[in-house]
Picture 1 (cartoon, rainbow, N blue to C red):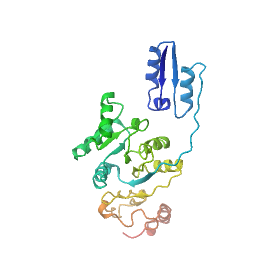
Picture 2 (cartoon, rainbow, N blue to C red):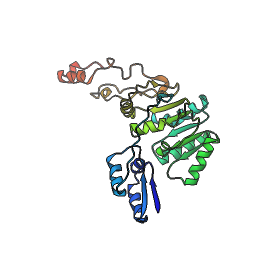
Picture 3 (cartoon, rainbow, N blue to C red):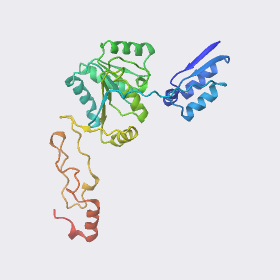
Picture 4 (cartoon, rainbow, N blue to C red):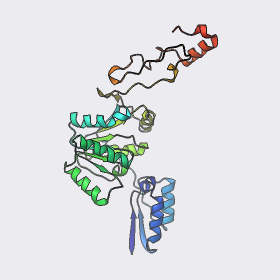
Amino acid sequence: MHTLVLDEADRLLDTGFADEWARIAQLLPARRQNLLFSATFAPAVQALADGLLREPVRIDLAPVAEAAPDIEQLAISVDTRHRTQLLRHLIDTEHWKRVLVFVATQHAADIVSEKLRKARISAEPFHGGLSQGKRTQVLADFKLSRVRAVVATDLAARGLDITDLPVVVNYDLPRSADDHTHRMGRTGRAGASGLAVSFVSPDTEDHLRLIEKRHGLALKREVVRGFEPEPIARADTMNHSNSMPSAPARPGPAGLDPNGGIKGKRPSKKDKLRQLQAGPSALPPG
């Protein structure tokens, strides 16, 4: 009797292996015992189970009430292009001995880990594009503190138990609120405390708010000195006639415009529309 075990079936589908699984299933012996495990049972997982299992015995494990893990969560506002420099800065100044950094793609894992190594921080990528042997070696080195930073895709968000992992960083925000939970769960395990840091840029602010809403969070947006995000250009600051002077160049992080983006300091779109309707004489001088 052959036995097939599918673990983390929901992740198997989430990461796009449905077609590969269909091809593998055709090569398996017809007579076998099938076991399927999944943290969630979305319709796609149910469809997989229906096609794989025959008269299955279903076992549901009710969640056990546990004390909330001791994980401090921080959100740091930073421009996208400054995230790697900020990560290097935090690793050095906060003296993080080990940090698990989550990124969105395999390419990003390779690039960010390479940049950390150039900054003399021992780092390795961890993703599905690596061989099983390489991934095993990376985890072994990480657990023994031979590697200071592992830059990983969501492949590392589940199933990894790394003792005393002090810090997790969302370099890229996760796609879903559930993935956020699994990422954060890599730290603060077995009663230990942990720190979870999320980098948020103007482009990803709305996505972080959705994650906060889903989990009932209200994370304060921290700013690290020297890595302040630049103010967002406002559409209503555009000139309405060629006779008006051009807007000054936007200052960098070291010299932010004190009035930039503050309500009441500049005419609103409605004010400018009323000025245009009233004729050129209603426009401010200049």
